[in-house]
Amino acid sequence: MIETINLTKKYGSFTALNSLNLKIEKGTVFGFVGHNGAGKSTTFSILATLLAPTSGAAYVNGYDVIKEPKKVRNHIGYMPDFFGVYDQFKTIEYLDFYGASYGIPQSERQALIPQLLELVNLSHKQDDYVDLLSRGMKQRLCLARSLIHDPEVLILDEPASGLDPRARIEMREILKELKNMGKTIIISSHILPELAEMCDEIGVITNGELVASGSVASIQQQLQANKVINVKLATDIEKAILLFEDDPKVSTITKHERYENTFTFAFTGSELEQIALLKKALDQELPILSFSQEESNLEDVFLEITKGVDFS
Amino acid sequence: MKSLLINPVLNKEIKLRFRSFKSFLGVFFYLFALGGIAIGFILMNTVFSYNASAIFRPEQSRTMFMVLSFVQMALILFMTPGLTSGVISGERERQTLNILLTTPQSSTSIILSKLISSIAYLLLMMVASLPLYSIVFLFGGVSPALLGATFGLYFITMLAIGSIGILFSTLIRKTIIATIITYGITLFFTAGTAILTMIGMQFVNFQNLNQTSVMPYITSMFNPFIILLASFEEGVTNEINSMSGIEFSLITGFVLSFLLISFICLFISIKKLRPKMKAKKELPEGE
Ligand SMILES: Nc1ncnc2c1ncn2[C@@H]1O[C@H](COP(=O)(O)OP(=O)(O)O)[C@@H](O)[C@H]1O
Ligand SMILES: [Mg+2]
Image (cartoon, rainbow over all chains, first blue to last red; front, side):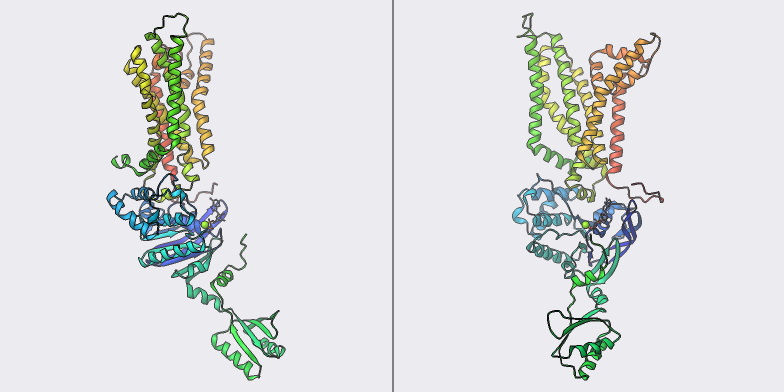
C-alpha cells in the first residue's frame, strides 16, 4: 500500500513536485507515466526515504516515510533510474552483500540467491563479475537485489529504460511474474504503452502535477470523448461536408490531402449521436463508402493529456 | 556491538580493498620506502661513515628509530586522506550510494565501517613494517614501551585525519574536492601548525622571560610531528609547557583534542549521510 498526501518537493524556488496525491492499494501495479523531468524520480526517491519532501506526507504499508524511514526501508524494494555496481563483485557476491545488509542470515542467503538468479534468468552468470554484465543483465540483477528481503512493495524507476526490445520483453515477463506473486508495484516510464499492458492503474504526471489517474481503460475513455472520425465517399464530398458542418458536435473538418473524397472530423457526441449522424447522412442519399473511428492508441492519449506541455 | 563488528559494509569494504591490486601495490611501496630509508640509514652510519668503526651503536639505533617513526608518520598523513576522502562521495559518484542507503543499515554502522576498513588497511601496513623495527631492537636504544606509544600516536592520527576525510566525503559531492580539502587540512596540521608554533616561540622569546603565551602550546598540540618528537625528547614538552605556562601534558592534550575532532567529524558524518527527514517548522528555503 502506498499513499501520498499533498506531497511537494521544491528545489529552491523550483517546484519539482506539486501536491501529489496518490493511493495505491495492496497488490496493485501502478504505472507512473511522465516525460523526462516530470517528477517521477523525485516521487520515488521520497518513497524510498532518500529525499525529504518539502511538505506533505507519504506512507508505505502504513509507515510514515518521514517519521519511520527505517521501517519503510524494510518493506520496499527500490530500483533507481540510474545505478552503479561494485565492480569487483561477482554476481553472487553482489546479492550476498545486499542480503547481509538486510540482516538475512548466511544460510538463508545461500538458499535464496539461486532462486532470485533463476527468477531474473541470470543463473548462468552467477560467477561473473557484475561489471562485465550487459545493461539488461545489470537491470535484472538490480531487480533481483531489490527482491532479496521479499518486500511487499516494489518501487521501480524506469526499469526498462535503455534496454533493447528483447531485453524489454524479458524485463516485462519478470514484472508480470512479480505481479502474480501479489506484490504492490509502482513503476515509472516515459513511454505509456510500455506500461499499459501490465498495469492495473496509471497516473500521468507532468511538471510535478498528477494530471490524470485511474485504470488504463478509464484514462482512455476520458479522452475518447474527443474522437476523430474518417469518412470516405464515392462522390459529392462538398455536399457531405455541408451536412456534417451543421451538426453542433462536429468540429475541425479537414479534407484528406492525398485521397479524393475523404475527410476527417472531430466528434464530441456519444455513440448514439454518432449513429444518428450517420443515419442522417445516409438518409440524404450520400454515397458513403466508409465511416470509421480512428483507433486512438495510448501514445495519442498520452500526448493528448500532456498537450501544451513544453518537453524541452 | 556485535552487529557493528560483523557488518556487511565492513565485510565488503575489506574484501574489495584487499582484493584490489592497487592495495597490494600500496603495501609494497610503503614497505619499500620505509625499508629503503632504514637500510640507507644503517649504511650511512657504518660502511660510508668516516669513523670507520663500522658498528651500529645504540644511540644510532635510537636515531634511526626516530627517523623511521617520522617517515612512517609522514606516510600515514599522506595516505589517510587519500584512503578516506572518497569513501562516501566515491559511492555517490559510482551511483551505488542510493541503493546502500535504502537498506536498513544504520548511518552509524555505514560510516564506522568505512572508517574501520580504511584504518584496517593502514594498520596492515604498520604491522607489515614491524619487522623493520626489529632491527632497532636488535641494536638496542629503544624500549618496547616507546614503540607502543609511537604506534598509539599513529593510531590517533589515522583516526582523526580519517574522520576528517570521511566528513568531507559525506558533505561534498565530488571526491576530488573532498580529497583536496582533506589534504589541505592535513597540511595545516603539519606544516601550518609547525610554522605557527615557531612564530609563537619567537614571540615569547622577544618578550621578557616572565611573559608566557598559550599559542605555541595550542599549535603544537595539533601537530603530530611535534607530538612525536615530544614523545622521544622530554625536553620539548617541558620547553613548550614553560613557554605557555600550561602545565597540562602536551601529549595528553593532543590525544584528547584529536579524539574530540574524530568524534565530532564522525558525528556530523552520521547525521548528514541521509537526508534529515523530520520535517521542521517552515523555514525559509536555503539552497
Ligand atoms: N537535486 C536537484 N536540484 C535541482 N533540481 C532538481 C534536482 N533533482 C531533480 N531536479 C529537477 O526536478 C525535476 C524533476 O526531476 P525528476 O524527478 O528526476 O524527473 P523524472 O524522473 O520524471 O524524469 C526536473 O526538472 C529536475 O531538473
Ligand atoms: Mg527519472
